[in-house]
Amino acid sequence: MIPSINQINITIEERGINMGISVSICKALNKLFPLPIHPFNLQNKGIKTYAEWQYEKGEETIKFYLEKTTVEEMFKDKVVLDIGCGAGGKTLYYASQGPKKVYGIEIVEYYEEEANALAKKKGLENRFQFVLGDAANIPFEDGFFDTIIMNDAMEHVDEPLKVLNECYRVLKKGGKLYVNFPPYYHPFGAHLSDVIGFPWVHLFFTDETLIKVYKDLVKDLPDGQKRIDFRIARDEKGREYFSYINGMTIKKFNKLLKETKYNVSYYREVPLRNFLTPLAKMPILKEGFVKMVVAILEK
View: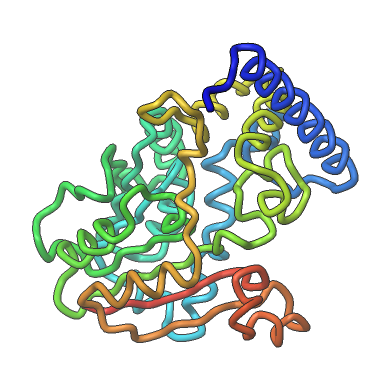
């Protein structure tokens, strides 16, 4: 039976009402939770730039690997690639650890100026190079790098298997890829914590609702439109979606690893808190209680 125009209009109207209710509930619940410290907000307040924040967090980005390796093994006299370098702050931290050269690859063009400014400020221009490009098509020859780092990047790339295979191609024999990422069902796996502090919000509300909430919360900020463009895109049918994340789960990542040629020399699933370790080890619950997946992959 073909619905009438009136029935279609009622359905659209009801959907609009339901969406409005859902958005209102999400916003109300969000007010109950404090926002995590986020670099976008720090930059808006003039406290520090995104690049400066990244530099300060540089040591933290590699701490999980140091349970298996050393800073010297990762960086000393090495040629290094940082996948998804953002504004280059963490990349510059790596450049301060004694490598021959560190390259940071990033698809967001406007980060280059900020990265180069901090490189000059830190006196690291000769050891750092910002590369505008896609990690699924790394613009370097085979066997170029000793070390590749994917810190909080695996959950963002559009073609994760292709990226892993590209990293394998440009690694030297015996070179290592260091990967760490928060799985999608992490409390802030939606990556909206610059304005949404409600943990696991993406489990309670649809992407459609969250897109509307996010846009409403950032629209009046100085960099509001930039944030929207950074996180949200439209598909071929014109529907909005979160283009900034790929929904990478522990299960998906382990499936991807089986499709690559790497030797997994280290693997760990870090729980949200130590007392939550039993939950983080349970197959049916681990996706929501693991803070970080950490892997060292060798060619």
